[in-house]
Length: 196
Image (cartoon, rainbow, N blue to C red; front, side, top):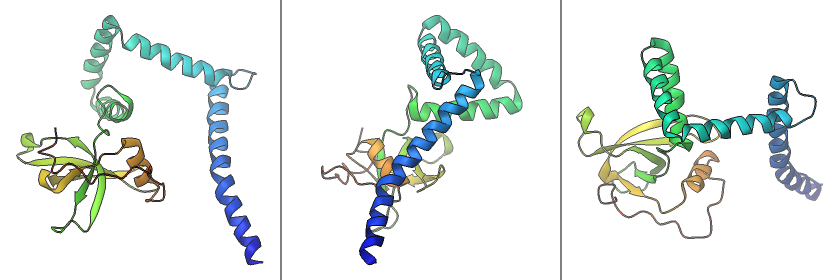
């Protein structure tokens, strides 16, 4: 009986990620298709991707960029719209924009000895404008959740991680379950002030 339960558990581990991924993808495709009211499955999804790519192409054009800046200035003058639009724009830029913020994975020492650490991503190299000279801001995502917290920490307490940002993000979000590549993770090149 114990062996059967072991096989069941292993099968669940192998099949669940595939099933969940397929289900989410199917849900996204059918939702987008229903927005366009098209009969052929997947056409609406392909159309949505094409529209996003086309708008991205237009956004790379100098003339279109000036038009986008006009919209940015307009939205920045509307009270509630400014808050929502600015927040969404900044979050998307942080992940996929030209000004990516989550590209500097670091380890934050929570105690003097460095025996307790928190992984995160540097979002601001200097907080001088807040009167916090020598401090940086680090965003630390939560595991198994689409949230996180911002930690303001002395630059001397962080160490750069010589790993891909995507690997560190997967490691954090999975609660440390996602494996890192076989390459040895470098503890960093010293405090943030000495890097870059």
